[in-house]
Image (tube, rainbow, N blue to C red; front, side):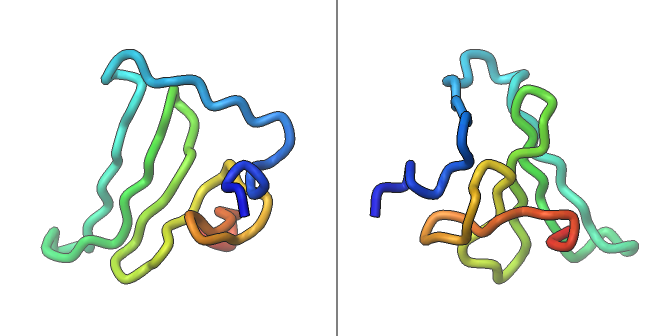
Length: 77
């Protein structure tokens, strides 16, 4: 299947032109030793999440789970 099939309607992914448009926010455990998650924020909008062991990660841009990403909902947090 075409990966575009999995995108939510009306999603327009513009290229990132400045590195300040991309933020990866790392969340560690209370001891600062174990990675809990990495939130991917593009142009100040939460767009994805990666957690150790998750394959694939999660995205707010997809309408259904697929080979490249699972749906990121508040329950996924």
